[in-house]
Amino acid sequence: MNNTSILAISLTLMGSSALLAQKKPNVLFIMTDQQSYNMMSCMGNKSLSTPNMDKIANMGYRFEKTYCANPVCMPSRFSLLTGHYASEAGVKENTQNYDSAKVQEIISEGSMGAVFSKAGYETLYSGKTHLYGTQDVTQYGFALNNTNPYEGPAIFAEKVLAEIGKEAGERPFLLFLSFMNPHDICYKAGFDPRFPDKLPKANVTETTRLLALQATLSEAEYRSQIPPRATNLSPISDEVPEMVSMSSQWRSWDSAHWDLYNWMYHRLTESVDAQIGRVLTALKNAGLEETTIIVFTSDHGDMNGSHGLILKNVMFEECQRVPFIFAGKGIKSNYADKSTLVCNGLDLLPTLCDLTGIESPDGIPGMSLKPYLYGIGKKTARDYLITENYNAYQITDGRYKLTLYELPGNPETLTDIIANPGETKNFSKDPAYTKIKAKLKKELMNHLSERNLLPLPEDRTIENIRAIEKSKNAEKKKKKVEEALEE
Image 1 (spheres, rainbow, N blue to C red):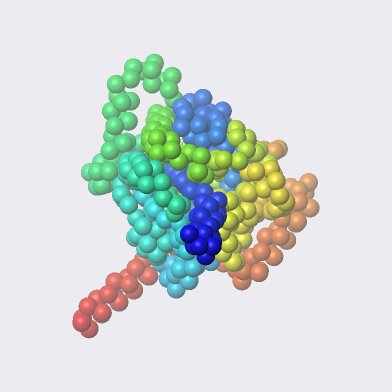
Image 2: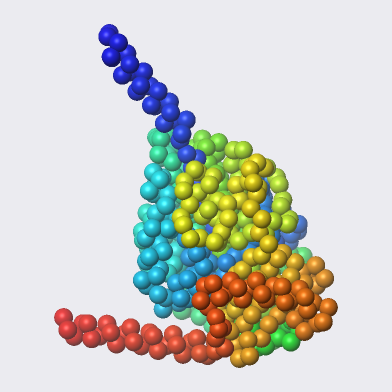
């Protein structure tokens, strides 16, 4: 063999070794729907059992002060998949009337799937979508598999992880698993007038199963399983009804209704925990635990009786704060970070990019959490976090939360999570909080001004939003009819 051949072989071997050495970690992203931050055993909740979520927490780093970008499905998921606020696409609620051009501009180059696909990752998605711009996830850079949002992600994970484990290929994967529950609590434990006759079978199956289970329990057994009610049952002082109008119509419920809702919310969380367990088992059986970063979160929480409210869409801790856990080789294990102010929607993409050595998209406001996870490198200081919902913007420094509403007169609330963790007191008019309020408001107004969101409108009432939706939908139907006639 001549020297040229030996050199060629050496270069080939060196190249292969370098390729193996540079192989990026896999990413397994697990998301539930409507799960509050405290709905895990590891958070001290003794009214449910979540061994699989707890396992991820024991393996990894848990950010306990994590807020979603917007406490409702579509805008929160848009942020998680792009790192952008939904308001950048002209919407802040669940709607099909978004700025299509802006959505496409953001997701074509900067969506999670697109970014990772360009970096050589196989990008796979299974379960619930509920996204702006598409009924699919291909426009977000993913291949969609098994759209059943209940067992579907677990079934797909068992299949694809086993295949990847056998192939031992060099191409890393990003597997996004989007589970439905405990979102079925939206059907109000069977109190929804559409239940069960007008809802798709898939949406009522688990609730029906649990209601049947509840019927088999003796009164004593059932009472022993009902979690304690929230202690902050009263509305926040100086509440303007439109601040909470999407969540307040059930304040007239009696104790039996509240008990069943509370019981059902915990059982639905246990239900999805079991599905997550199947995924973790599949990852282990495939021999991929050592080479995979696991991320667990939820899109938003649920009020579950706090302030007499249920569901989401309001600017209170219960539906704003969510689980956010990272686990993987080198990441601190069984670590609970109780102070770092984090937004899963804004910080997820820059963090995943940093963890995998991929360049993060330009123009996203979040920060990488890698220095926290590994305990090395410079940690980005965050003095304030700004979030939004359908009719408000909020700024928090981790203790104080100032919310400005797009309602008549632009009412404000100021809460103090330490002095009044239940957020039943509005300190916005309290002289003792004047300096704090002024400081927060200045920062928030600067942010809104930089984004050309001022002046704030005063007409974001539910009636106006629905009227606009109705008008836009009518225009869409009219346009479709005209196009059909032209053809």
